[in-house]
Length: 343
Image (cartoon, rainbow, N blue to C red):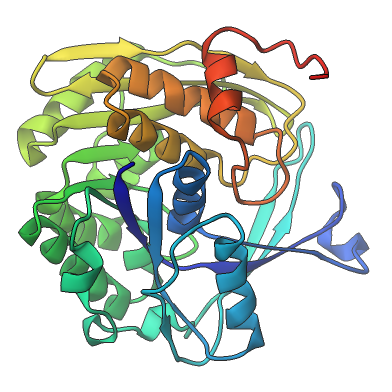
């Protein structure tokens, strides 16, 4: 199996039980997660050699975060210890027309103050096949943005394929700063993943008249901006998830991809997901599935279908991590979405 490195922040997730609002909650459910950590767990569950790189505080909460990764077979030996605290995010899960809500408490977290000298990138990328990061990590702090570029440079020096999930977070930074920082990082990227908001807010490309809140997808707009993105950044593949948000509990879910070498656009099968159990981590599970498809040697269209199916399944699982295995994903890709009891 392939060796995959992901780098970012793992956080303590405190979510209200069921669909309670924050003001109702007398307790919180505890999970751990974060964009790149979620991708590492997905790939480990599929049998790949997945390692996660981060920095966590040297205290019991930091140890719990590391243990959550180890439980699912993620390599944690390159995780640095130090700093003041683990980042926290609070989640209120919406329902029907009430949207979910996230509140961050991650200022001065360990990864936000980490520097390249905390990590031996030559050792980390020795024998690696793939490196994945997201737009969340450089948004955490200026230091984390510098760290991300150092990791990208090291990955390319070792001949590693680099992917990014653009992941714009308006509660962390402005679109103007995102475009400045992320446009620079795109020089290292081979596979660019995102959605319509990410493409616009992070890189300045808007796909036609698409309006996900109305369920209106104009696919030709994606073809146009994908071609422009390839021309500007020379990505080998540009990929977008396509979420049609009918309500917090009901989404349409598909994806599209453009191949630079084949000069061809492809739109995947669409899944109707209702009711949604937990959509947090949906994009990460998509990225993990697509990366797995590529690492398995699938063609780029089949890799996309694998990612869409994996992510559709993640929407049925509480928590950040996608805990499905290959058999689960293969079954859905093969057309078995009946949900019948397996005896």
